[in-house]
Each structure stands twice: as C-alpha cells, then as structure tokens.
Length: 217
Image (cartoon, rainbow, N blue to C red; front, top):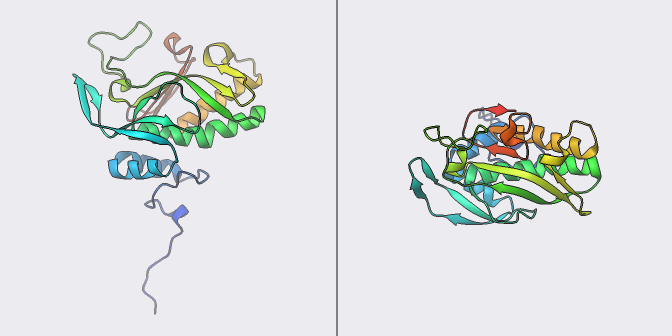
C-alpha cells in the first residue's frame, strides 16, 4: 500500500541530527548551525564527539559577561594546555574544525597529525580589541560569553612546532600552507574567523568565534 511517505537517508535529510564523525558535505553547515542554536541538540551532538568535558553552571560575571550552556574541555583529542571554558556551540565547532579541517590539512602537508594546540584563552570579560587594547565603551567581545577561542600554534606528532606569529609568512612553505589551510577550514565551521591579515592585534593567533557576524578575514 502506498502511503506517500518518502524514506530519506539521514545524510540527505537536513533535519537529521548532525553526525559529527561523518565526512562533511553540503548539508553539514546547516546541521551544525541548527545544532548550535538549540542547547539540547548542541549538548547531544557534543556528547557524540568523544571529547571529555565538565558542564559549567550558567553564570553572570559582569555587564554583558557570563555564559550559558558552557563546558570546560578536559580532553579534546589534542592537548590544549590549560582547559578552556567554551560555550557548547564553540566546543562543537572546535571539534568539527579540528577533526575535519585541521587534521586532514596536517596529514596532507606533513604526513603527521596535530597532537597539541597552543591557545591564548577563551572566556574573558572584556570588550572588543581592534588593536589598541580592549576599548572602554566598545561592544563586548565574543570572549565575554565564552563564544571565542584564540589559537596561537600547533605541535605535530614528530615534535615540530608551528606558530601563527612565525610561520604565517606567505612564502608557501609547508608550515605556512598548513596555517592557511587551518584558517580557511575554520571559516567552514565557525561564524567568525580573524587572522594575521586582519590587523596587527591578530598577528600571532587565529580568533575563532560563534554567534557573531559572519566574517572570514
């Protein structure tokens, strides 16, 4: 008996849950954005990543500062040094970038995975920094809501260390190309990405964020 129902494979169904392990396709961005918008969906997707984290209680730390639905990452498949506090959307986007953009790029350029990521922090109750420091009266940074993460460097499995400050050179060597692949890949999984070509304040790191304006600079 015909019912009119159509069985759509999950990979072609835009409303199916995000499969964090699947190779990204043309629907991944939509599914990721859908998961990030809903706290329950976001945490469910995050639970499927295999990352280890502690749930953080919602808190307000100042005017325009604080976080909701946030976690403290304890283990993310790569070493992170200090454990960053990230909103669930940021943590989910971080996983997608690390697994589906950063690691493939590292293996392509060096034949080695990334085993550690150096960062300059995540949550901080401060205003936007456009190069002159956090300006009083300016809008709050996405860091103020744990929706941003600053990546300064990478360590490969063979011990090789690559930093944004030194190796974003434009000379086309493997380290430069890896950083450019990582930056370009981040633009697929975060709402905002700023790097050394944006301004002097970002000469030594990539600023990655969710929830703000769409930008890839």
